[in-house]
Amino acid sequence: MKHVIFPLAVLATLSALPATAQAACYAEYKARQDSPYKLVYDIAPISGPCTLDAAKAKLQSRLAKRGLTLLTVMSVSER
Image 1 (cartoon, helix red, strand yellow):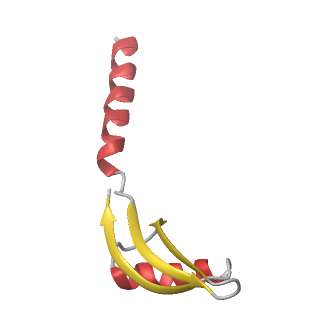
Image 2 (tube, helix red, strand yellow):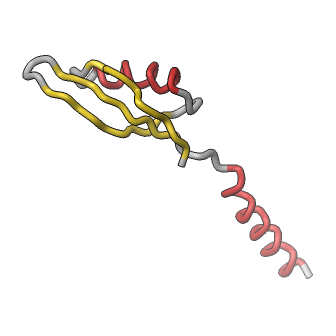
């Protein structure tokens, strides 16, 4: 009987995992580089709350490390 219960318990645990997974958040944004001048449009994954303000805060520091200035966050979406 132990051989039947253990696989069922594992199966029940594994089937519950996708239900607890959080949806990924993506932000659509525009940025610029000054030297040489370049405009950038991209979509980036964002951790944390899926809001325009949260995306703006995350993207500003991330893009600054690449020499880019965030112009606007156009939208956020969960997928």
